[in-house]
Length: 279
Image (cartoon, rainbow, N blue to C red; front, side, top):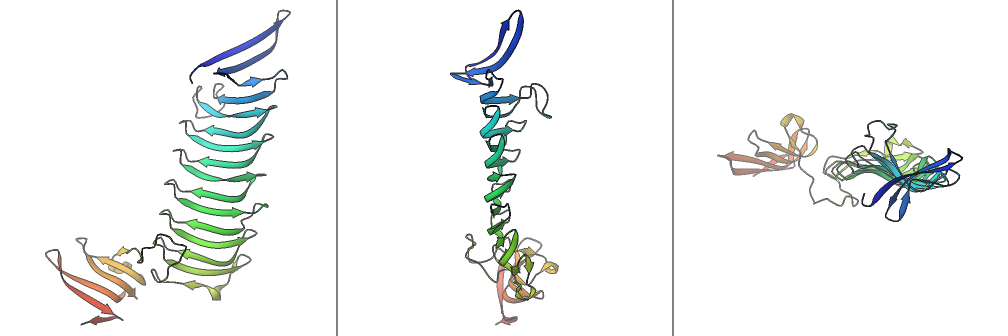
């Protein structure tokens, strides 16, 4: 750090030391200061000089933040041994109470939200390591999930969308495939599913306005013949060319196309409608 001077002051009286104080001076700012009552004040940087923190070198910065009358206050930042941020916690009167951010070891944000009285409060977000959202939840003042809750696939598309009340599912819960099509709709009352109102859907049959990336057609699954599912499929030949594509039912092409090749080029396209070949 530019302009940093390490100092240790000893105040002697009658041939003995009565107090000691260690701090840094960075420009005009003092760091790691204790007042006359030996209480920590102002900005502090904690290094692993005493070997207390496992995995850190003695010169590694472990955490930094502000003290007021020997108690942590405002935002404190803790670091991984590699120097990346581990978390940022907001303190009040030496207790973590406020906005919090938690990071993956590579520096990517992992979680963020308001940490209050040892629990999350309000909006809370959890991220995949690729930066896409994994959870977008809402907590009430009691620390229970309440209101709209969202789960996401790693590709950024919705996985689940529904509402919670006092920590339990309530009303409609929609489940999505990775391609954005609706997989199922379930209805809950006080956290318990209502079976007779559950609706399962074939892949690609229904899309939702909440899915922003829908291009008008589900992403084709490249499946072998034995892996066909009801709904939209695309089967491939051994050379990577498309054999069939369209809507299948009981492993049979209902609406779609069959491609005939010669020397790697399509020489005929056979169309099926309603399970029958269209002449």
